[in-house]
Length: 258
Image (tube, rainbow, N blue to C red):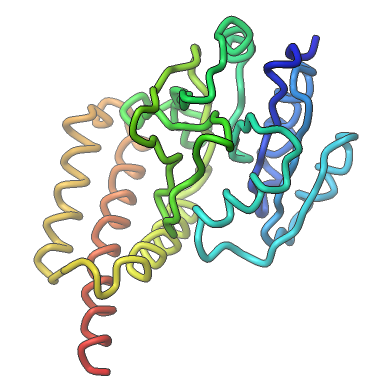
């Protein structure tokens, strides 16, 4: 059954070349039949993503050529929704039945932002060492996404509260080190572009950030106990951290020469 009137929610999904995950993502959402609206923004898929989406009736699909700023893009898709309550889900995230039960039980308040717990999977293997909590449900009359090129979040304004929704959402982002490296390249470039001229960086700071990231993810977060999956993800995340500051250092050099 659908949510009551006061809980009418629009689900917002960003996607690009998500043929491997979009069917399971949409299947979990549509199976429960509890959301008033599902809208999807495709940012340039060249695989079968849109063909798979077309098999799910009632989904409103929009198109955009790439993403230069994730915060702006999330606010754009939010503006296309007909409801004020918005739930943002990525195309590689799968909502379990327990999530919907938790959502049904809570009372939504516009002055509250709701977050979900998320577990990353690599090649189908869960990696608890990468567990995080992300803000994803909010009322757009009260707040919006921060204007960040990368690592965008819902702005928790002064006086607003933060609450959780039960269950762990599965995050199936990576099936190969190719995908890990591609994301490292993309996110590090966005980071460097965003902070060029605003944040300092040196070759040594790039090395230190990369080394610390590997130590934190592999040892402190105990991914050492998850075999190859734990090692390769920790290593690639350390590469991403190194590249962020190496690229930022070069951006800053270019600006001083202009």
